[in-house]
Length: 103
Image 1 (cartoon, rainbow, N blue to C red):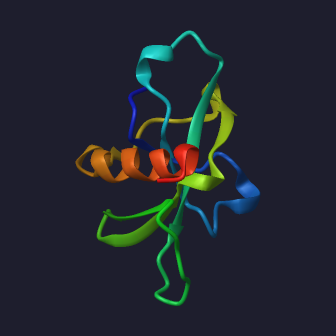
Image 2 (image 1 turned 30 degrees about the vertical axis):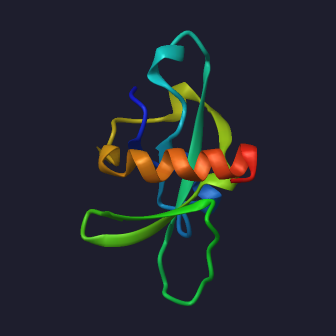
């Protein structure tokens, strides 16, 4: 599993609002039993997002990745990748820096 891969949301309860999660954790930490992911919210055009969010286009739809909502999930629950968001790597790194350093 590689950083910035997109996977179907393993949490059935929240899947309708957040159909996917994106791997935020480096793939160099493969020994861990958990993986840090951020949920992808369908962009509805009504919600205001901060600089800790990343707007992406995935499978013909717009999403907002809620970096501040990162969570560790059991790696075994992440099924086959649906794609990746490597093209947004700089945006993710900026959002993570803002989250942890404030700027």
